[in-house]
Length: 105
Image (cartoon, rainbow, N blue to C red; front, side):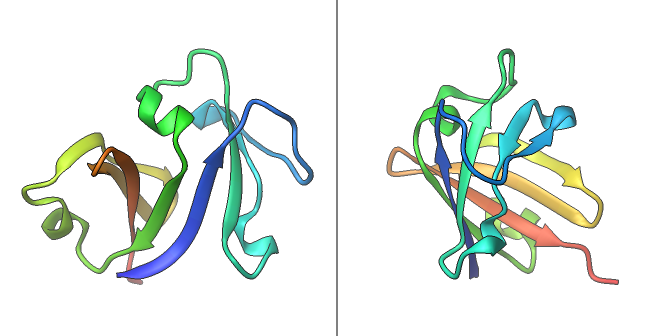
């Protein structure tokens, strides 16, 4: 696993907002700082568990998402938010963790 970013939910506006209508959320660019901090604001009706919408999460890149999910408590099933990327969320000790697999080309 390799650290990718820290996602922090907020209800406030923030600098550098990026609207993602297909995901019903607004995010900041986690690559605009050396620590991978990403702000996230969820739109009304965003289809995510309250745990993800209210508690910060840490995201890791993995080689084999299906294998990493085995035996884990999945709270967001694998999905493709952008081309070449599949993600899923699990719950670990009451905290959401995002697992990300980039498509090998």
